Image 1: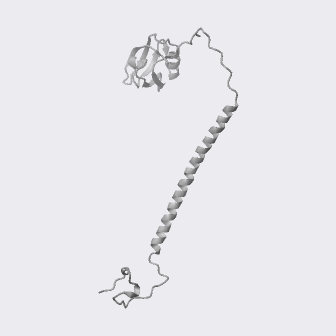
Image 2: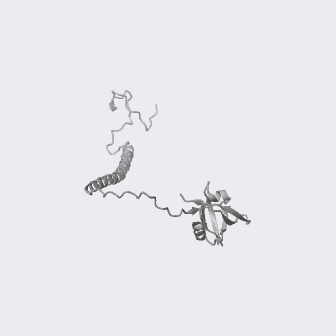
Image 3: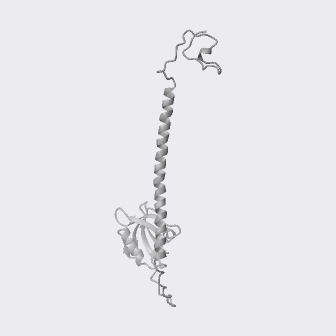
Length: 191
């Protein structure tokens, strides 16, 4: 049998010197040599890194728990303050006759921004809405609303605000293809 550098572990019940085959190359164990130290060192490093990770998670979750705790404590203080304040005075009853409501604001149901040159560029049309019903699409440029010339999106807002909801108005539009068209739009009520 030839000798190898790797030797099997002794069979249970036999000590190193109890081997049935005498080994002439066997030396006494060297106390400085530790063959499994590298594995243990790796385990120690792995354990250390895992502990650092767990510690970091606990610290970070502790910050979250501290925030939740501060919120709960703050809410309890708020409840105490509310209990200390006197109840509000009773409000007078509303008048029996209804008060006239202010005039309703008109809307076209679209979103617009300033166009590159003149007009208001339509960036969105609400479905359903007065603009959609009139035939406006995204990319149209509004040039005139009724008798008012539209130079910017702010001009469009002012013109629509002065319009009466439910009353037809003419709208001059330049489509993205370059064609012009006059549409009839009925402004709706802002709800």
